[in-house]
Image (cartoon, rainbow, N blue to C red; front, side, top):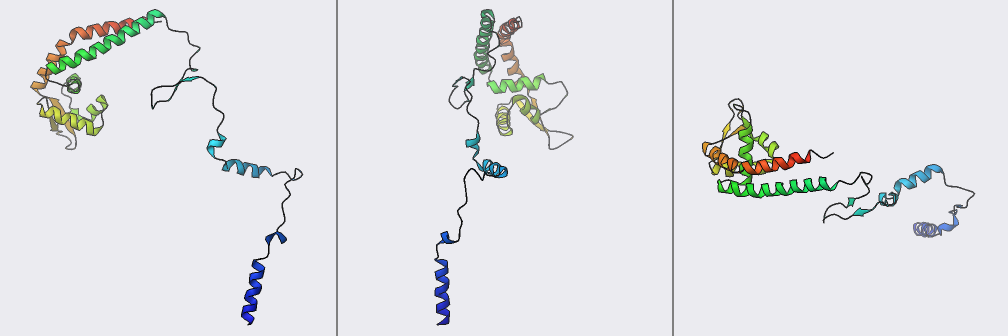
Length: 209
């Protein structure tokens, strides 16, 4: 019986309203919140809520997936002259035509556009200097997997060879074959006139002030 009485007394204490022992804090102006509390509250505020208001600078929406164009930047620059725009447009059109003509010329020579550029880079390197795969990857801006695929197809076409370095077996060198140099020469000579046209248009841009 003594145990049951003690248990009932304990339950009565737990069920007593808390308002009897808890004092309500005074939140009037006479008791301002300490400065360090304000700092802690601001630190807990979400970052989105603390962001400054959006700028009023005008913006033009770009293509899907791209950031809008900020037209407020550089508005103090003078507008380009009509002659400058005409030379730039002529150059871009000539460059576009050059790419189209290049695609046709390299196909007629039995190459792809990437293979033609690959052979150009290899043959433009200094003689007697081994061309490493890493150098080609950096020059063409290709990741190792894409570079390996390009070399595999070029080697299957018989336009280049891969050999291990005599000084370091971990390094692989690349060189063009006689067939690759023959195809490169054919496409290169067929594009001579187009290169002169694009070069002339590019030189006209240097006349801009």
